[in-house]
Image 1: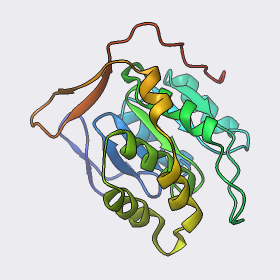
Image 2: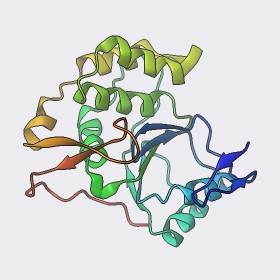
Image 3: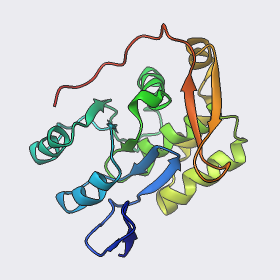
Length: 200
């Protein structure tokens, strides 16, 4: 896979994690990164990673984070196909607070395959951004494919974003870069609680 790197050269060795994509300017999503993906991730200049699985982060990955001064925020959300086992709302709300704080950008969200837990978090972000549910569901299903789960879509639809709006009193979009499509979410409220990091 040939990818453009920051200095304008083309490097054949940059391999993105599975299901990798850009969500917003400074926000990315993917499946679980492997060591072969580290050069690609390094090129993103990440400040933070949101990890949505309960399993411990592999030591090799932790070493990469330490070497590149990347914070790890872990939310131990179980992956389940059971119809009556729901994603914990508090964990998603806390992850959203990390996600919209540009002090943590550039940031990567990932779970195991970048489909269900990651898709649910991104879907709730889209609700916060006032996307219509049809567009939110289309994006979720684009990454989940045939593995799309009705329980995830129901969770996204029912998720209440008002606590997040109450926490963030004034959010503005600042357009940056080469086109108006590049947006960053900025805090104006200075009294928000600092996010809790997982030591790496």
